Image (cartoon, rainbow, N blue to C red; front, side, top):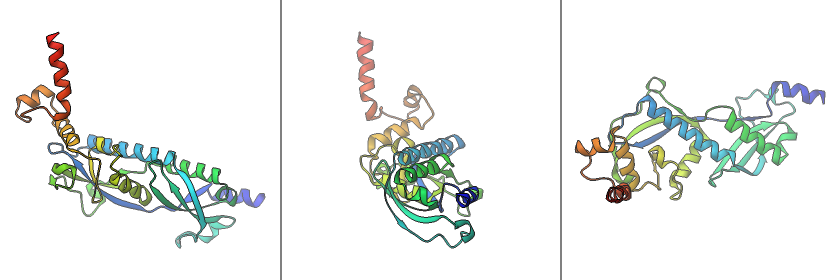
Length: 243
């Protein structure tokens, strides 16, 4: 017991060996510019989505593994290293390499609890990469592609996040039933188009990206007609005036 207590002073309950990667996102917006408010909202939104994914993750299985070469072997006395396969709330599969005490790693319920705590509470998973942080800055110039956001204009944003989190976002982009990326304006994740994006989503995003109210936007000629998604609202207004 004394040896276990000494080990806990130097080693946390579990240690996840992560690797941060860069992720390129295409954001739908012909008139929007990637200012700090948009980037901060995007960062907050992605962190919230990933927190939901990992808060309800389930441990599928685990196998023994070798610790990374850069880890000091002296820190691993009385500690085991395993590779865990987990499934997030949207059924994406992620593999995690971690080390911890045998009591934690061989107790499914306890291990799952610590994984959730480490992934969700320890730090923000997603951060925007500023121009000074990367040799190849992201481009704010409008880009168009018929396979992304129904051919609408997009601009590029670069994010940094753990490799497994990037895998989850790429998986979610391919799911036609997953709509939570669309309200953030995300049209493509590292070259993978967001499948749930449709023309009405584009109309809605471009409509609100003008930073003008509805009457001003129509009067200035930005929109020759209201977007299709607002047709029902216009009908309701007409009915209200008649009454």
